Length: 329
Figure: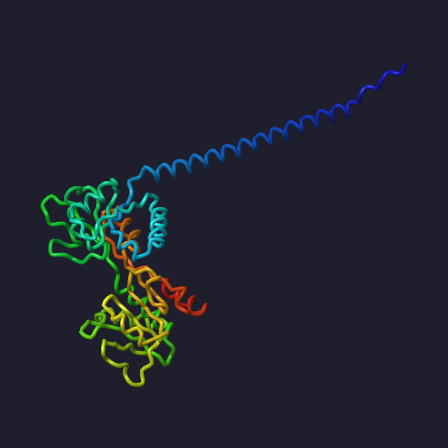
């Protein structure tokens, strides 16, 4: 009988090498799998910590009423609420009160959420005073605030009361951006017009100067005109766009069909004329993020209105892009 040949030394070495290679590959695979699991576990731990932090942090609360929320647009409010929550990484709560709620009721509605800061529209400024007096350690903010006789920034005057911060609108920046938009909307042979009541005041000289700066910055050299109720358009003048502020006579808009509008208002776009081209929103929702950020540092704030270009204003794609660009500056 022939005995089987023993494997040579080279074959034994080769077999051993293959075994070692297999072990090494398995070891590397296990290390890769372990590394992946560790990275995934670390990511999930960080994510869980972030979510827990979001849920446990004291919220920002905004006091409002149902009528305002409806007119401003609840869908728009929801988007602003979500965006502000993510930016601050803390919840934003909405405290709904009656439009005629007494100061104590507005203060109690805000306090019910245990907030990090409480934001009150100007119509509830007395509620902010009441809140600051009861909870001096929590910042209270009044949006669209103006200096008051009891102290700079609207500081509460009562003894022992907390300081009420202000969240104001930078009107000069707004009107400068409005001027840029008007310069884009007006062709070379047309002029922008401020529409105002018969006995109303046009924009102040300072705001008109900011508007003119905006016009010049986009290369427009025309001079705006002021149209009061009951007055005719000057002979030879062609209106390229109308600028409407809060006191503008909306009833006169029918005289200018199809002319682009630049409007300062917080109304929902669904309630605006179809030829609204640019809208400046200075509502509490538009000011909430900069106001809350400043208030959490115990500071007042000044910010521009939220300017948007209407997608239903009949603008060309090029005009829409140009307006969007100048409003971001």
